[in-house]
Length: 116
Image 1 (cartoon, helix red, strand yellow):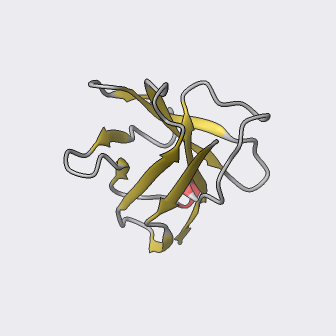
Image 2 (cartoon, rainbow, N blue to C red):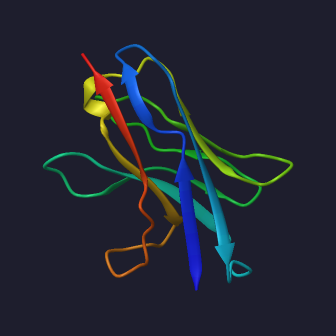
């Protein structure tokens, strides 16, 4: 039983910035890598960034640019940050284990809506 709670989304102007946070709870002792996923309107959920414990990984999209993922020090929330947002970055952002699939347990996510 692992729960993920995402926060930080909302309505953002084009050109604004995104900084999301994820907190995991429950049976998390075996998690060694996590990722951020986005489900955009009309598109399946996709991985946008992932981090292995103690490291950073970025998965840039040719059209959307690079996202930055990090694990903060004190509380160990998982963060996702990107500047210069565009409408195509709109979607519901969720965090989960790196190996998550459609059968995994997903939280509600946090919605980011980028206005033109």
